Image (tube, rainbow, N blue to C red):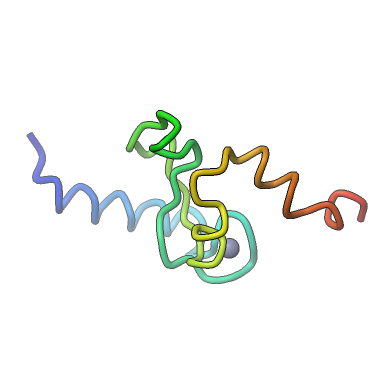
Length: 80
Ligand SMILES: [Zn+2]
């Protein structure tokens, strides 16, 4: 088994690097890792389900399914 603490740190560093330290949902710097499919909805705690997110987006998204959250927050963007 991998030490959970180390692999978590490595995973976080890799995901942050992939997104250039930015939130996956907005231009702000990322501070957290967001579960794309929330754990509460059965999403796995794995790299495929994690993206960097700023506190603002992560808190706002919460346990909302991504597609629902995006549709609710970005009507202006879709029209642009
Ligand atoms: Zn954000």
